[in-house]
Length: 437
Image 1 (cartoon, rainbow, N blue to C red):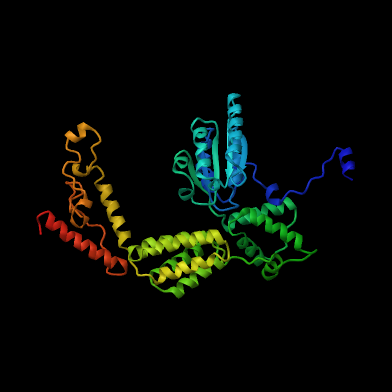
Image 2 (image 1 turned 90 degrees about the vertical axis):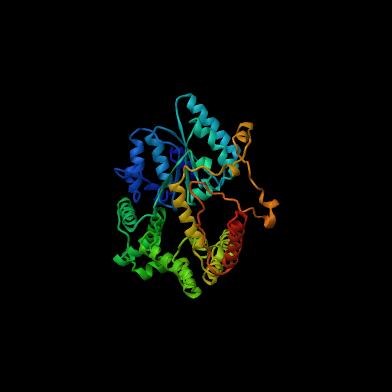
């Protein structure tokens, strides 16, 4: 049979998925990202000049990152190269760079799209720097992880980060209407079931079109699914809340306040609601880390260690086993002594630093690497604390024009009680050694 197709000059091709067939042909067709591609969007403004710089596209799956990268290449007349960080090594990148140099010599630029760029290690990320700097490639990386944590600072300094948002209900419904127009038939869903399908997509445009295909395959002639039948057929439950709407923020707020209020039972309830609703467990892990540094702080320094360990355990175990590590960390936070003293100290110190950022530290604590600096008194009179009684000299370290400040005021709870006693002892020694005892 394949010979007959070949003789007729035809090729047998597998049907393309709906999401691929409906991939936007121009930036204006991208839904849900008006802040980037709308009439006054960031990318729209960039493209008015006819060029774009290197970019990092950060956002959840199915929000249009790959599509936008392809369209940017077309809009700027660049050759488009796409790789995945999972399957690409340094040797592969070198070949791509050599190809881009060859094109550049012929007057053609290259847009290199790197999917899941956060999966590249430091050496691989560093390999992009010279070709970004000399214009060999315009790098566009896509990531679902926070670039601040996952990408090198040197790479980030050479690229602009653009945030892609989860698609709202209106954007998902717009995609479904496009699918119905392309298929020339309506989805066999009643009004409630259609709303459930939108929620099932969970802000992921690609997922919404995949679900639509599944619905059409499953429906018999003349059959219309209600919400219950839809969930049974797709074997998928709609999230309890839409992560892009108020439910997401309401529940994370409730979780945070339950931890702060030392209620482990309410903490577990809201944690389980979020995980059961399909919340990204790593988002929950990040919030637990924030709670550890904001609400427990140095009252229990182990809280931060345990939250980071829980995050790593989730990475190692995956779902659902790893979710138990998050639950354990949440219980620990809720039952730990509470202190926001470090949080308040940081805010106070930051405000003072901004107001007094031009003051010079005392010369006694400045290094003197040159003879001239020694002659100018740099480092003169500095006392090495380890050589002093109690390993404490009692010197002043603030700029003279500012005087001593007191930002950190530990609470009498948990480990901070010990820190408070230690600071009181040092304050007494400072007064004695500065002749103010």
